[in-house]
Image (cartoon, rainbow, N blue to C red; front, side):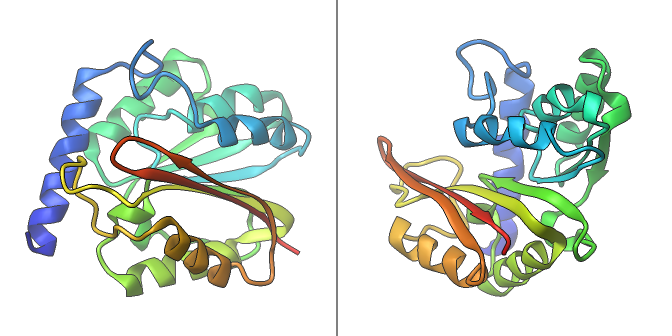
Length: 214
């Protein structure tokens, strides 16, 4: 499968997924945010006027939870996804949960988004890196994420690794967890790694990486 076919396959997979399930539907993949995202939400609640960037936001699984929990702190969540249906659902869901004032939807590829340096208090990318086709694109994106976070604030990256051949959607990048960890630690070499965890699943592993800018 070439790069264009792979991207088309991934878009169709997620379009079908988001068409099949409602956000926060019980028993679905979208039922609740990643545990590591949930763990950090109380921290962002304590930062007035904080700015959050959610790359690969989908219909708002994480962005809406963050915006809802931290709305009283005037938190702004920029939520980016390249799938039109995801952005449409994000906008609908933000109105449904009454957090549209704190959500800034953006239809674009994560690799193309301009990330202002020293601007965000938290950047998260959940199940995004494994779907970016080229090493150069991933390296550039990680570099821009690193530059975009303000001093003492955080980045959270969650990605699948070690995926078997029948895992869907087919990843563009399928490293071993140890290799993925080395890539992230290199990209954030001057940061403090606050948490790193590998969860073994059936047919793949999930790597979660949380680091604080020093």
